Image 1: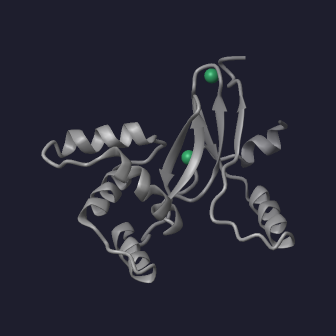
Image 2: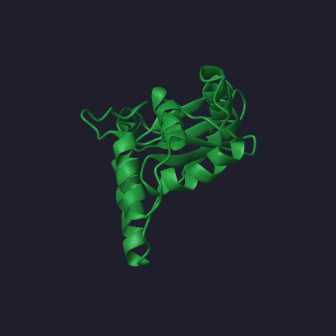
Length: 161
Ligand SMILES: [Zn+2]
Ligand SMILES: [Zn+2]
């Protein structure tokens, strides 16, 4: 990578100020899909939006269980909810860590791609507008409606090489 390219890579994309309320967005999605909005799903959304970063279903499940020990939430309801959250634009699959799919929330967090170090597991987020342009062009040319994308570069970080 030459120095000019390196400069363009931002470690973390800028946060979008004033992004819409995720639960409100999901309520609207439910209305559109003629689905019932359940408080349980609201709770899962709350936990997803409580912090930034990449998480898997097991991690999310234990976070919710620790925070709400009295609420009986089955892990399969998380699994069932995630595709809806993705379709509603609240969540996306971001990368796979040791074969486990990780997710991250989308609102207020500009979309980006990932580099994952095989050595230490470090994840570097980057955003390169040119990649976006190419991706959108490919979709347009193939008449493909993109819902989400996962783009992960795997290799070794500067410390692990
Ligand atoms: Zn590393
Ligand atoms: Zn990310």
